[in-house]
Every structure is written in C-alpha cells, then in structure tokens.
Image 1 (cartoon, one colour):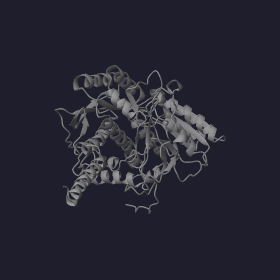
Image 2 (cartoon, one colour):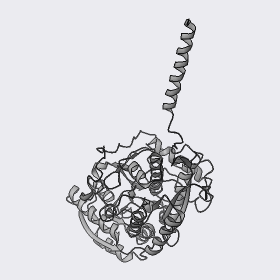
Image 3 (cartoon, helix red, strand yellow):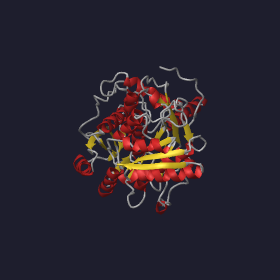
Image 4 (cartoon, one colour):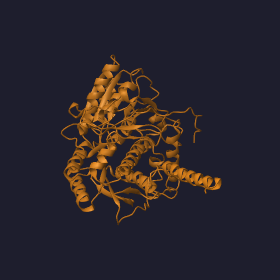
Length: 478
C-alpha cells in the first residue's frame, strides 16, 4: 500500500525533473559564443595567438598588405584578430558536429587585379579557406565575386562600395555585403544637407565605378531634397593621384561651400592635407577651412598633420559610428580602448585608439559572419547562405538586416561633424561629434529590380530597429 510519503516523494522527483528541463531550455545554445564574453584581457594585435594548424575554420583576410595602402591590411588584421580572440577563447564555433577554432589566413591583393586573383585562388585551393573578407576597390571586389562563385566560397565584402557589385551580372549567392554602398552614402549625405545653409557643392571623386556612382546618386538626391542646391563643379581623378592642387584651385574658383569627396586611402589622405595647405577657406565662415564630406575623413594621420582646428567642420558619413548615448556601443569601444593602452607600434597610435568608424564597420562584419556560421552549424556554403539571408544582427546597439534578395545590409546611417576639442582624447586632431541618424527608409540601398523576390521563402522584412539612444551626461574632455 502506497503511503502519503511515497506520493510526496514522487511529486518531488517529478518536480525536480521538470525544473531540470526548464533549466536546460533556458541555457544558451551549447558552445554558442557571445560577442565580448571571451578572454580579451591580453589581446595584442602584434602577437596574435590563433591556431595555425589542425582542424580549424580557415577565414582569409584578402586585402592590401603592401604598397601605399598597406596600412589597410594591417588594420583589418588587428580588428579580425580581436574578434577571433574573443570567439576562440570561448571555445570556438560548433560546425559540422565539432567545436572548431578560427584560423586567420592573410592574403595580399597588392591593390592590383592580377596579384589579387592569384593570391586568392591559391588560398581557396591550397589553404581550403571557408570564407574570405575584403576588399578595397570595386575592380578588386569583382575578382573576388567571380572566384567565390567559381569555387563556391563565401565572400564577405566589408569595404567595397559600388552599387553594381550587388547588381546582375556581378551579384551571385556566395557574395554578401556588410557595409553600405554608393547609394546609402550619397542619399544620407543629401538628406543631411537638406535643412542646412550650404547650397553650393563641388564633387571630387575617384575615377572608377564607386566615384561615378556616388556622384550621380548624390546629385540626384540633393536636387530632390534641396531644389536650390547647385553642383558648381565635378572632377574625377585617378586612384593614387599625387597632386590635387589643380583640382582644389578649381574648387576655390567655383565658390563652393562644400567639397563632397569620394576618395579612400592615400587619395583621401592627400586631399585633406593639400586642401588645408592651399588655404581653402569656407565662403560661409572665413574662420574655418572649407568643409569636406565623405565616408573616410576621420583618418587620424592626415588630421594630425593639419592640426585639430583645420579638421573642424569635416562631415563624416559612414556605415557605423561610436555614439556615447548607446551603452552597448560604448561597452565594446571601451573594451578596445583599454586594450589599446597596452599595445606597441604601430598599434599604439591614435589611428587605433578607438574603433571609430571603418574599424567598427569591419568588426561588425566579422562578428556577423561568425554568428551566421554558428547559426548554420556547418561550413557548407549553401547552409551559410540560407542562415544569412534575412538575418538580423545587433550586439552593439542598433540593428543590421541582411536583405535576402541581393545580400545587402540595410541599417540606419550616422553622420557627424568633426569637432575640436573632442571627447575622444585626441589633442592633435578633430574627431567625430555627436552623430545624427538618417533612418534606413531615407537612405535605402538601391536594388536591381531583377533580383526583387529572388528568395521566394523569405519572410517580410521589417525595418531595422532604431538605435536605442539614452541621454548621457557630456563626457569629460581628455
């Protein structure tokens, strides 16, 4: 005969079993990494400790490690290393039934098509990389797209901006872009200037696809949102130009109130320095140098050369930006900055002090890819593609959405004027002030109509969530 005690014991056992299953359900996915949860305390970009052999996830960084833009590869490796250290110290990623750590493979484009092709093809065939990231220059990115398709290898585009990369015939399913493009840059700049006093714009752009696309879209946007705006001049210059004086003297003669510059790397650096050396002043405020607007105007090296006051008024239009009002953003930024204080050359310079814009952009792209790989649970490119299409990502304060049709990120975009003095501790150069946010709906990336509806099973896409901005007390100047 069963006693009350035995019934009571059975219920206790059943209750324990129930609570155990509740506990299991509440646990995160086994082996799942979480950004910034790893051991980053001793990360040193000069002495990275990722595995170099064994059963690893081989991820290639395909960019310039030699020539005038060698600092790009140097910088992107530091950022990738930060992400890899974070993930590997959490045990890596479970793929194909095993926990595997990430191995970094450096692949030098030399900023030239033929070397870029040879080096990447070798990495794919001999190193057996799972995926590769890059790359500065649309002409180089197209090579990556073709090889990604030929060898069924995922290409994570972090820094090539031309719209046509996501149009047919260049687009293919193995290619994803986690940065903005010509249309997001140009549209958001147009919206930014809508209610400002400047009306005369001069465009200086690199003479290749990105420069021409961005120019065309900016002109169209600014005329739509600001009918009294005038394009008082436009010039296209070759990549790696040395002497910008002839172009800048035309700017001076035009009476331009803003120079919209579509230039990156060494060209961007020389444009900033030479415009200040030639004494181009703002027609609206002769106490300031002429404003320049671009996604790449926060490079600390030329800004240090011209000095803090000469950088005031530059307009920075980027994919991602640190905003002190977003707690999750600043947690990441402070983690990086505290490590930076322990680094040695070349990483102890102001160029690396904060993950301000391009560095932040790349960090987001790296984390996002590895999160997708974790979600797919496989290195099979088809499974990675299915996991990434329509995916959202938001570890640092605002949402990024991967548009399924053309594999283009959609997100709100920040724009900020460079200020001096600033709150980032830069005492020799201007730095971004508090950004304003251009909603994604006002700067949507253009899409090839032939790709609309390409992914038949996609869910309706919600607009990306706006950044969660909390009022914060002004940071103390350092």
